[in-house]
Amino acid sequence: MIERTATVATRVGLHARPAAIFSEAAADFDLDITIARQGEPAEDAMDAASMLGLMSLGIEFGEVVVLRTEGDGAEEALERLVKILETDHDA
Image (cartoon, rainbow, N blue to C red; front, side):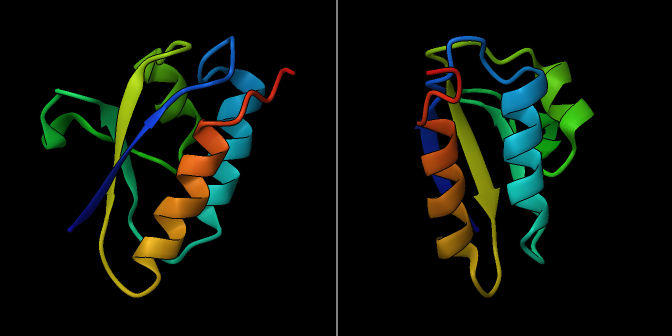
């Protein structure tokens, strides 16, 4: 299992547009990728490719999240997704 943390840079957090951008990118990979707030149990993580799941987490600006996955291309996937989360999509 590979794990990466990211700090959410979009001022509105992971709501509507930023959640759509992130979930579409996560769906591009043939991997099971999860996301959760840092410090929460891995069992409470949501499917990163689910826009509704992301929005249900209520992740706000500045919060740290944990992304987890495994398999071929996992490093590349998490690097790309961390960059998306650490970009302000409302700027």
